[in-house]
Image (cartoon, rainbow, N blue to C red; front, side, top):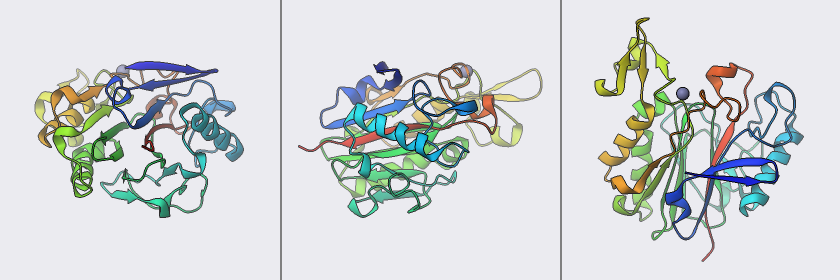
Length: 263
Ligand SMILES: [Zn+2]
């Protein structure tokens, strides 16, 4: 994992994706940014009670920091589904510069260069995927529901229809609630491999969503050496990362961005 500072803003990158030609990507933190009040920082959620002008400025900063064409940044309305949407020029800007043009999905796939796609997270697991040689990139929002529904697997299937091959995919599992902090009840636990769950004295369980997602990628044929888990827990680092469970309803959203560069 790499930490990148631009002005007063802090970002994280996957070393694997950074070393792959033809891509630009980042995982944002809450550090820096124009949002004020309880969700102060680099909030990217337009629907969390923030001033829309602040949110827009935050996107502009990120666009500048990573050479993303602001107008093309595209994001879905996330609904904890396993819906995968292919993004072309038609959808460019939806959810951000075309704020009221929205569609529901939890994974975006694109083959179009200079079209940054983003998913939001504030504990849920963001997964970035790319087969740079085939020119296919994806951003996945994989919370526990998405993980149980194997949304990364559905995403890879769609990437394959666009020419990607599993052996060429580089994957990064971004900042999110870690095995140290993701506590849940029995009904949720039943959905995961038992070795990913730890019994707690209070009758609850801790579940390792990072490993659950890594396992799905491996089962899809992604090579172990091509998967990077950033191992950055949003709850343990809630001073610099938005955490839904820590800050309750009053929390912002961070973004995982990926873009194919022009040749
Ligand atoms: Zn933690």
